[in-house]
Amino acid sequence: MNIMIAGGSGFLGRALTKSFLADGHQVFILTRSSGKMKDVHAVLWDAKTTNGWGHLVNEMDVIIHLAGKTLASWPWTVSTKRAFHDSRILPGFALAEAIRNATHRSRIFIQQSGINYYGLNGNPADESTPPADDFLAQLTVKWEAATKSIEDLGVRRVIVRSAVVLAKDGGLLSLMALPIKLFIGGPLGDGKHAMPWIHIKDWIGGVQYLIEHESAHGVYNLIAPTPTSNAEFNRVLASVVHRPYWFPTPAFLLRAFLGEMSVLILAGRFAQPKRLTESGYRFQFPRPREALADLLG
Image (cartoon, rainbow, N blue to C red; front, side, top):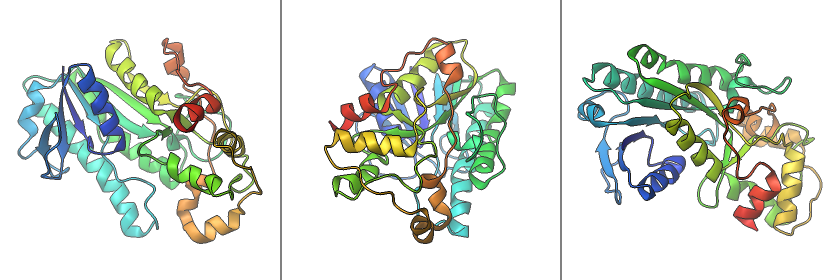
């Protein structure tokens, strides 16, 4: 297959590309960098318009939208929040326009999104749960809406609301493990809030599963099926790397240092991958100990 990935030079894009290449697919990466990429077709774009690349959509079987500035960008100033918005929504508009103008359309469009859609509080959520009204939730609503028009073009559209993706190389795991490795780790705040996570192999496996199953459409939560609190996650992490599990880091200190960004580590709502498991997908790493032992043990 010919596969186009917007945001393919990022952490998730690189991991997904490696898997696609191993399976013999051709991968086209939409990038704003002029540097060469090994074994892939690097295509320059401005992440705003279809100029210079839109015609390539005619050759694609799969298009994946992963573009977006990482939320782990401190501090969250007005300009940073605008960058969160523009780096997600504008590429979505451009991809939708390219598909609308194509004479041959891809059979599936994958839209990356986030588990933050469900907000920071409440009962366990699934794909039928309505969005919250906080900043991250409403950002996610707009992110998804930017490509909604694709559904009217006869293209199968799948939205993957992803949890924190755990991997050896890239992502947040190395940063999350650092305090514990330095013997100062413990729960963040009271540790009772949800820690949404998924192993990189299950994230890739989930995306590939949804591509291959023609009946898959709409929203799917890509999150491990075992609800895990922040305290439990850090306790298991400490055990895996053979470090003590000490006192909690006070929430007020984290809020003072990180500001609004502190919600990423001090709040969270439990969610379930209901539609993915009901469709038949089987997780390789359903529990945190198995996942962390594979990555850090």
